[in-house]
Length: 308
Length: 176
Image 1: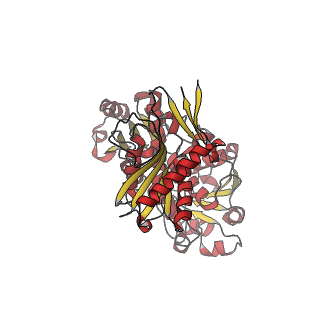
Image 2: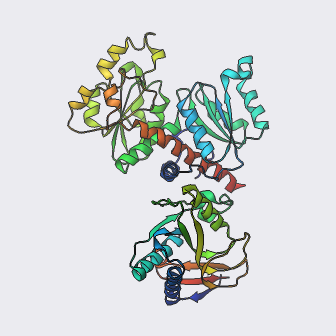
Image 3: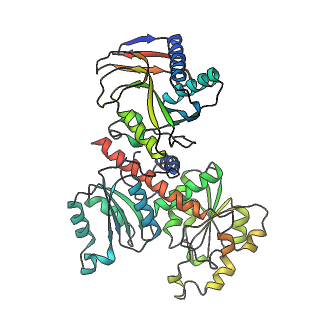
C-alpha cells in the first residue's frame, strides 16, 4: 500500500482501494474463527479521537483495533478539555507527545483529518470529517457489494437521500467510480449539489427510475435533526417521494440489493419490511465494517514500519 | 548470484512419497489426523502428501492450509511475504493431531506463527511438523518430526523449494 494515511477515497489510488477491499475478505475469514484475535499489531498504540457522536463507527474501529491486538485509547470530546476551550491543534499536540502510532479521528469540520497530518507523525485514519468524506464506510459498502456480486466494475449503484450533507455519499461516489461502477444519485433537488455531475455521476429526482436502473441502492439516513428546519418539510412527505418501500420494490421485476449505512429510520427512508428482507445486506455491512477497518489499520501501520 | 540445484524433481517426488509413508506408519488413527500446509508452497506440498496418504490408506484425510503472515513476529520487516492470502481450515481442530507441512525449516519463526494460528481455531491434541528441507540456524526450540533432507547452509545462502504448480518444475535450489 502506497498511502500513508486514509483521509479520503478521492486521492487514494485504485490499487490501494482494491487492496484494502481484498485484504478485508481475509480478515472477514478471521472473524469467523473461534478466536478472533490476531497478534499482528501488538505494541501499537491507536487513539480513537471522536469529536462527534458515533456508536457504530467507534465500536467498529475499536473492535478492529482490539482484534489486531493494538492498544486502544478512547477520547470523546464531550468528556475532555475541548469543553474547557482547548483548540484542536493543542489537543492533538498533547496527544502526539504521548507517542501514538495511529489516530482515528471523527470531527465535524471538513478537512480536519488532513490538517491533523501536519501536526503529528502518526498514521491518520478519517472516521468522518464533517460533510467531506467517510472513507471506511465507503470501503465497507464496496466490500459488501463485491461480496454479493463478486465484482464492482460495471455495476449500477444508486445512492438515495440527502446527498448534499452526506460524507458517506461522497466517499462512495469517489470509490465506486474509481473501481469502475456507474453511480446515480437521487434525492430532493435542494439536497443534491448543483454540479455533482462533474464528479462523473448521473442525477435523478425519481426514485422509481433509480430502482429500475440500479443493481444496488444505498439508502442514506435522513437526519432527523434536519427535519422541520426548512430542509425537509415532513417525514411522511419524504417517505412518499423517496422512501424505499415494499410497494416500490415490487413494481420492478429485477431484485436489487439494498444497503444502508445505519442507523436506520424505519418508516422514513426505508420500510421495516425492506430493511429486514433478504434483499437487504445491512447487517453484512456491519460485519464487513470491522473486517475492512482491520484491513486499513493493518495495511497502514504495516506500511509505516516498512519505511523506517 | 550462484544457483546450485541440490535436488531434482525425482528427488522431491521421492521425499514427498517417503514423508507420506512415514506419516502413515506413525499415525494409526487416521480419523484424528489432519494435515495443514503453510502458504505458500507448503500448502501444495501438503496437498500432494494428502493425496498419497489417501491412496496408500484408502482414506479421506482432513486437510487445509494457513497463511501465517498475521501471526509473524517479524511481519513488518519481512518484505517478501507482505502479500497475504487466505487461510482455509474447514474442520474442527479440537483434539486433532495436526501435522504442519512447510517447504523449508529455517529460524522456526514461521512454525511458531503457524502454531499460534492453529490455536486460534481450537485446541489440537498434538502438533507435528514435516518439512522438505531443514537448513539449520534455528532461533526457537523447534524441531521437525518428518524431514526430507538436511542441508547445512550458511546464513548468507538461500534455499528455494520449487514446486511444479507455481515454479514450473519441482526441485531444490541453493542460492549463494
